Each structure stands twice: as C-alpha cells, then as structure tokens.
Amino acid sequence: MNFWGYKRPDGRVGVRNYVLILPASVCASDTTRIIASQVNGAVTFNNQNGCSQVPPDQQLTMDVEAGYAANPNVYGTVVVSLGCENCQMDLVVKAIQERTNKPLKQVIIQEEGGTLKAIDKAVRYAKEMVQEASMMRREECDMSKLIVGTECGGSDPTSGLAANPTIGELSDRLVDLGATSILSETTEFIGAEHILARRGKNEEVKKQILGIVHRYEDALRLVGEEVREGNPSPGNKAGGLTTLEEKSLGCIHKGGHRTIEAVYDYGKQIDTTGLVIMDTPGNDPSSVAGMVAGGCQVVVFSTGRGTPTGNPLVPVIKITGNKLTFKNMEDNIDYDASPVIYGKKTLGEQGDELLAMTMEVVNGKQSKAESLGYTEMAIARVCNYT
Amino acid sequence: MINAMIIDGKDNVAVVIEPVKKGDTVSYVDMDKKTVTFTAIEDVQIYHKIAIKDIPADEPVVKYGEHIGHAAREIKQGEHVHEHNVKAVRENLG
Image 1: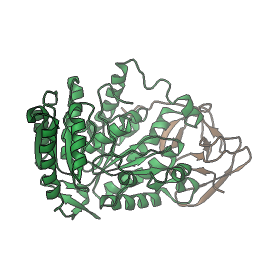
Image 2: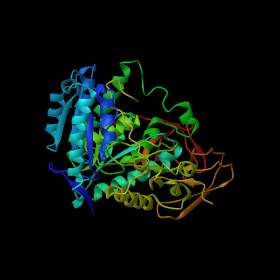
Image 3: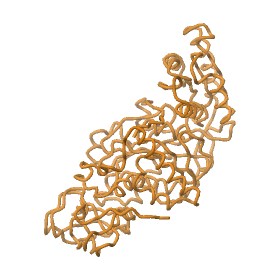
Image 4: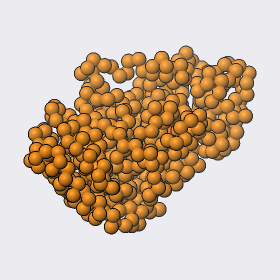
C-alpha cells in the first residue's frame, strides 16, 4: 500500500498543504489570526504561551512552535513575534531550522512599527507562499513516511469495549504496512505501565515507559495530588471497572499489540517507524498538539460522549463505540465502531474499515472535524493537564 | 440474542451490553464469529463483567487479553466479576 502526499525538501511528506502563520507568543496571536484570515490557504492558532514561562515550560512551547513549522502538512511558515517575548524570533527560527529547511519568513511587530505594517508584510509573505504551495501536486509515497496519532477523549464504557480496540486494530495494520502509529496520553497508562513496558523492544524502551509514568506521578505530587488514590473512581466502579489495570487497559488498547519501538518526549520529532509512544497529557487538544509537533499527519480520535475537536494542521478522524452518540452527533463523528459490541462485525473487520477511511482522509478527503473548521489546540505544561 | 462481548480470545470474562438477570442466557460472539452461550447465575449490571468460564482462586482474571487482577476466590461461569471477587495485584515484571 502507498499513499498520495506532498513531498517536502526535508524528505518528509505532507497530506495537507498549508502555510502556517506561527505566533511566537500570546502577544502575536491576534495578529496571526488577522493575517491568516486574509490569506486563502493559511492557518494559525491561538498561542497562550511563549512568554513569562519557567524554562521547562518555555521549552515545551518552543518544541510545539518548531514542530508545527516542521510538520509535513505545512508548506512553509511565516513566524510573527511581538519582539520582547521570551520566545525570541532568533530562538524560534533556530529551533525550526534544526528540524526543517522549508520556506520560512519572519515578521517582528515592534520592529515593523505596529500592527498594520506587520500585517501588511506578513500577508505579502504568506500570499506568495500559498501561491507557491498551490503548484504542488500529490505524489505516490511509501507508507514509511506516514505517521498516525491516536487519541481518546470524552470516554464512556464503550470506548474501552469498541472504539479503542478498533483503533488498536488500525494501529496494528499501519505498523504491519510499515507506517508509524503513536500511542499518547501518559496519564492513562498509569496502572497498566508494566503491561506496556513488557512490549518495549529493549530494556531501554521498557525503562523509558516506566520513567514517563513515574515522572508524571512526581509532577502531580508537586501540587499534592496522588493519581493512584481513588482510582478507579466510584463512578468508574459503578460503570463496571474493577481495577486501575482494567481502566488503563481500555485506554492503551489504542496502541494495538505490536512492539513499542521508541518513547518520545512531548513535541519531539518522531524519527522511527512502527509503534511508538509520546509522553503527552490526557487533555485532548494539548496531547494532539504534541503529536502534531512530532510530525504526525493525521489523528484518529475515539470518543464516547462525542466531541467536535480538530487541529489547525492535521485532519482529525472521530470514532465512537456508542451507537447513540453516533446517531446524536453524526455531524461530528466519522466512524461508528458500535457494531462489534452487538456481534455484527468483528474487531478485525472494523480495523479494516477504519484503515480504509483513514487512507481516504490521508489521500485528501476532509474529515468531519476538518470540514467544520475545528482548529482548537493547547500546549502542555510542566504542572500538566491530567 | 447477543447480550455480551469479549475483547480478546484469551479473555475469561465478558462484558454484558445490557442488564442480565439470574437465569438469563448470556450470548457473545467469539473471535471466529461463533456464538457462545451460557447461563447467568446472578444479576449483572450493564457494562459489568461476567465469567465465561470457571476461574480458580488466585488465577488471573483476563480482559483485553491481559491480567486485570486475580480471583479472590473461586469464580464460577456465569458469576458477576467485580470488586467482591477480584483482587488488584501489582504485577512485577522485574
């Protein structure tokens, strides 16, 4: 199997072809919104961070900024900074250039002489870039260039029964085809980390899996929280979950059954194929943002209650195991994974169907979140979202 | 009628997908699409677990093909499986 994508000068392959107007900090975010709204084919996001952060937090922000510019769905980037923020233009540019050699332009609001002059310059850069980008044609590419992120949010009992195991089947198929699948959300490994660690390809990977879970627990202890206490919650137990292992297994089933090849810190560049883990928080938009910064071109997202969330750079495909939710939110949800619960389809059959749907979206079809224009995102912090 | 599901061929518990009463026939589809039936020996709430085979005391309770705990006592086929008969065990992988 191959896929159709846009070949980038850094050797990676996009499945979308955007120009990114990148806000270096919160102080440039409204400016980038105005710039992107003027240019057809430009995208941006609301960056709450980029200034007044402690160094480890600023590093997370820098990794997302650089990773977004390097994401293969981006043709080129116009970075816009205010001028006095901690995420200084030269630092952001250097971080981007360490990851990619794609087109890059810079506009500093204070140096240009305010909003209107900065917007004028940035719109001209962006306009030129989208015209260049529009000349790109999709080419047939090897599956080893495809990275798929997996995520779950707004879970209910059907998530662990149908939606996540179906994503696990998709993940196995992608790995067997030579692609990369990312398992995310460290918060949800807790209790099943020993089971995940057993699947690590060597001692180092096993140690890293246990390490990111322990680091997460330590970070929450800084604010006096103990994750294992009171988990599964009384609500979980009433819903039929008996142990923390069981609860976490329902989440990590998104990662299928293959060997875990590597563990990446939040937002770091994914540079291997097969099944990998990224250390992200359970909060959906910030977890997805970490994987997008890592270079994934598409995200498959399971939900029990139903959620519209998307991303500025990558299509997000929604799947639910709850037939009522699918009916209720069919405008938002792409795939109904409930038939396996009622014995109408096997997990294997659903995995085949979800793979076919994912490849359609990879090859250009808009997912529902994408067609409705959802682009919200967040960036992880040291005292993290859970 | 199908009223339970298993997630992995190694599982020794199923999840009921509608409320089950003592004496009801429980049916699930196995990994080969074959329907398997047995009798519930007690009531089980929706989305709770039911033993699909006898599980001896201290043997693993298996869901998702993985150990989610150990049987705190012998569990019979058709019994509700939850906190009262499962103990959480932190397995050490060394």
